[in-house]
Image (cartoon, rainbow, N blue to C red; front, side):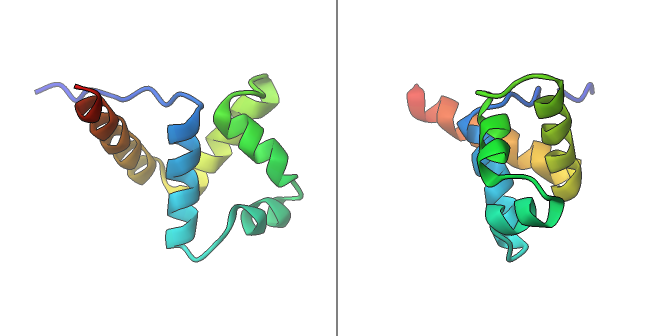
Length: 88
C-alpha cells in the first residue's frame, strides 16, 4: 500500500500544529523564538505564509524539524481531515 504524503502548506493549520506541539513541550512561541534570536512576529508570518521567501521556507523547515517531522505531519493531516469532515 502506498503512503500518501501530506503537503505542508503555510497557514493557520501549520501555525496551530506548531504552537500546539510547542505547548506540549511546555514552551511558548516566544520561548522558541527568543532562543533562536528570531522575532515571534517573523515566526508567525512564516507559519501563516504572509512571509514566504527562501528565509521563510527555511524557517518553516526548522520549525518542523524542531518538533519532529513525523509528529508534525501526522497532526497536520489529522487537523486537515477534521476540517474537511466538518465542512461536509
